[in-house]
Length: 331
Image (cartoon, rainbow, N blue to C red):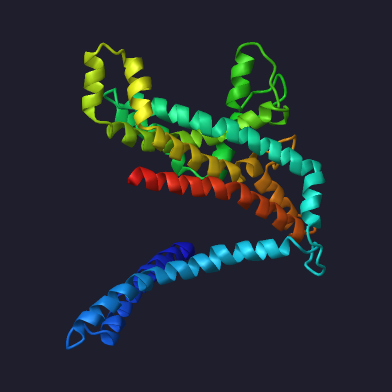
């Protein structure tokens, strides 16, 4: 109950603070530059120049406080030793290049980048096309989108039960091992199998992100002019030809945005790996490795910060390209 009241009070205070800021800043600006009198024209012009910055001010302040400052602080920490008492320069980055776990993490992240965005986008596109053509499509969309409402931790727990192992002869509570034993196979400890365990972890994120891709791509498909589709049908194009040669090319920009958005999520993946394997058995990823060095055992803030900077460097170009492409689509 206390947590509920805390959440409600936080929302109320936040909304009230926003309203008070906007009302109060407008009131003060109108007093400094009153829209009346002999200088009304100049006052309105100056107030119009200042007003957007009053509205953007809190956002810029909090972005600087919670985004820009942590990045600069992390970079500065990455140049020091484990407890920040000695400047070591680029030593932490040199250590990264020679560390086997870091190389494993980079390789696994590359695998995630190749598999998850591709499968999520393809399945989302197929789901968007099929659900728009069937009567119960809205119900289908709801079911496919539902995993998006589940946290990554919750999804990891659900799928960990699906991959659960019990010794041969015991009742299998894991769905995958139950299916295997029904066909006469031996149960496996799936999350310890090299290569396969990474793919099984990727399936969890594909399951979550397919709903996101489906919703965005469904909206894009509905925005395609009917005239182009009707013209293709009149020319004798089959449904597959209409889909691949008419629809897909027209929404390629949206597909690219969906792909890169999921790519950013993949680069930062942490929760699923942390919950299901904790980076063991060859499943380590960059975010989980950063967490291990930063918060586990004897914390090494220098190495943990160096990994965080590498992760940011990998994410930033994709994020910038994604924003640029989204703005181009809006034009």
